[in-house]
Every structure is written in C-alpha cells, then in structure tokens.
Amino acid sequence: MSLLQTPVRVANRCFTYSRSVALFQGKQYHRASRPFALINTKPRTGTRASIAAARAVATSTARMKFTTPSSDPPKHEMAYFPDMTTSLPSESGEFRRVLWTGLYSQLVLMTVPVDGEIGDEKHTVDQILTFTSGKGKATINGVDQDVKAGDLIIVPAGTQHQFINTGPTPLILYTVYSPAEHKPTTVHKDKAQGDREEEEGIDVAPEWSQRSKKENEELGLVDPEED
Figure (cartoon, one colour):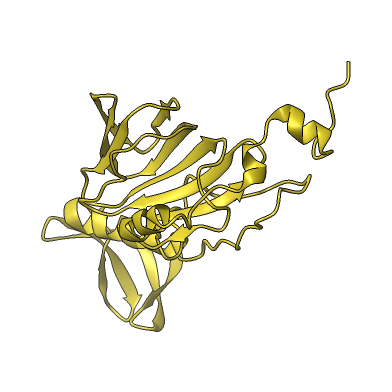
C-alpha cells in the first residue's frame, strides 16, 4: 500500500511520517514510518489552547514598533499604521503612547493592565475609543457598559468617563481625541507617570493643535475649500 509521505520535524531532527492515522488510547495520532513515533493531533482545548493563542499574539506583537512622532504640525502626507486591530499592544505595552497629532485630532494607543483603570475624568475635547483586545467596563456619566474587543464608545466633550479592565488580560484600545489632548511625543509607561506629567504641566497639547479652521486657513496651513 502506498502512503503519502509528510516531513515532520521532531526534537530538531526531520523524519518522514505517513498520513495514515492510528487510534491510541482514544486519541488520534500520526504513525511514523521511519523511525516509529506518535504525535498527538487532537485539537487543543481549554488552558493549553489559551496559552498557545497568547504565545501567538505575543509573537506578532513583538514585531510592532512605532517611530517617535514629530512635534510640528503634520505634513500633507499619509500616516500609515498596519495591523492596528490585530497586532496590539505595542512592543513594550505602554499605558499611553501618542501615535499621531493633527490640526484637529489626535490618535493615541492605550494599554490598561489587569485590574487597572484609565481614571475617572472629564475632557474639554471629544473622544472616540475603539477596543481591540481584552474586556472592561465603561462608566459614562454614571451609566455602566461592558466593553470588549471590537466595541467603540464615543465620549462627548465635558462628559465624565471611566474605563476599568475587568478581564484576565490587558485591555487594549486606540482613541481619537478631537482636538488633541496630549503632547505629540507623549509616552507613558504607566498611569502614575501620566498623572504626574499632567499635574506638572508636561503633557500638554501644542498650541497649533487648538487653532480653529479659520486660523489655519489664514496661516496657510490648509487651503480654503473651493466652490
């Protein structure tokens, strides 16, 4: 009987295994043709599957790096961030990292640790939060809402809000402020650093990010709309 041969690497040595399947103690195994060995092919479930998934995510996230943004008004060019919804968090998993700041908005990546929170606060700017990983609870003006990967929440300017990580893994999200809320080059390793820099007046949005559309047109930063 002819067999389809498939090379398989075991213990740093390459052997050839047949695709024929043998039953062994109620589990499925590949039978080795040279030398003999058994490899469990039963799908992993429960804790083992969770660990495997976590390792896969860690491998992909380790490749995601960010350059330091400019402190100047943005150029008229594309800002591209690949795999934002599949490769988060960033390489070092900072609590807050500003990715891009424009004339009227700002993109910020956040990683809330297990049992951590963003903090009960209000902003003078609008905020749109998109969750990419983990589970949490949002409290917006006294109303609670569970959140998970794939959810989006809008917080209007002047509205009380708090976000708490309620899951077993980091709560990952990216948020858009309009206009900017933070310094263009801000990177906070943890919430304590963010709170400290805010209190000391270090983490402040640049003046050029707070101008009106008319002011930017008069300064020549944007062209007036054509009829």
